Every structure is written in structure tokens, then in C-alpha cells.
Image (cartoon, one colour):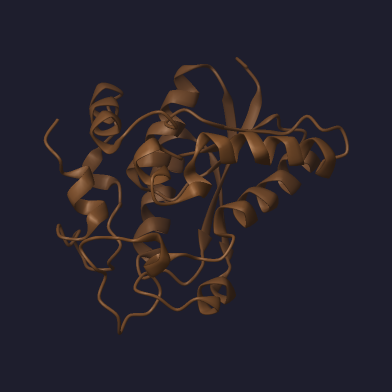
Length: 206
């Protein structure tokens, strides 16, 4: 794994930032970061945070406009007229096939550029409600990539897959990540709302 050229799905939030820092610590050569604007309220803040991380770690950054995806399922994450509930249920904020689509776009780049790994920020806490954050999902996707990439050597990894938010926050501090520059909030204010489930999970005392 060490010295393998890789790319990352980078939202600019806690999960992907920690997975990125851990990948670099393990010696992976992260060459490219992909950030997706699928019409989420916090897209501007996420892109800004991801750009900051890419500048910090000298990684090429590319943003994709996938706003059509958010329009398929207008919900509190994408519809500004709908407040984000404090307790998130997957049915309320589900974006159809989102993570699988992100990975397939990344896989096209990885195959073309001869990169080995697609790094994600999946974690066990969100996997409870969102199966496309889970370890079984990673395993299933990797089986698919054996057929959907010509050489079958592109692989998805997540260095946070067995962590919860509390553990990731502790890792972020240990790795020296600037938590104040990361954006995990579902809302789009000048500062994180502090009340949505993502904010509350991240702010759990460590």
C-alpha cells in the first residue's frame, strides 16, 4: 500500500479529512481529490474546506457539478425551504445511489491515471443508518470494480470505516488537523449550526 498513487473523495468534513491524513501517514501518494456539488445546502462550505485541505497537503483538487442528483430527491439536505431535522433518518435525507456514483466517477479517473486506491471517509456511526457507508458496501464495490475496470486493480479503502465521530475527532487532533477549518454541518451558514445531527455527533466530548 505504501507509495501507491491514490485519489480521495473529499467533502471537506471530519470523516474524509481524517481518512486523508491517515492515508498520508501510511505513505500513500494522494495525487487528486474529488469534491461533489450535488445541490447540498453546504456545498459552498464543503468545497472551501476541501480546497483548504488540498492546499495544505499539495493535492490537485477537482469539483464536479452533480446538482441533477440532488433534484432527484429534494429533501432537507438539498432543499433550502426544508429545515434539517436534529435526528436524521436515512429515508429523510437519502440521495439515490450517491456514494456508488461518486465511487464510479472516481474509478474512471483512477483507471485512466493508473491510481491504485480510492480513499473514502466512511465510518461505522453513519453506517448504522446509511448502508453505503459500511464495510460490506466497500467489499461489494471492490468486487464490482474487478469487472468494471480493465485491469481490475482499482480498490476502495476507508481508514475511518471502523471509527465513530468521537474517535475521528480524537484522531484529527492527534494528527494536527485544524478542526475549525473542516465543515461537517448540513446547513450553509457562516458558522456550523451546532444543532444538526452531524454537528452534534462531531461535538461529542472526546
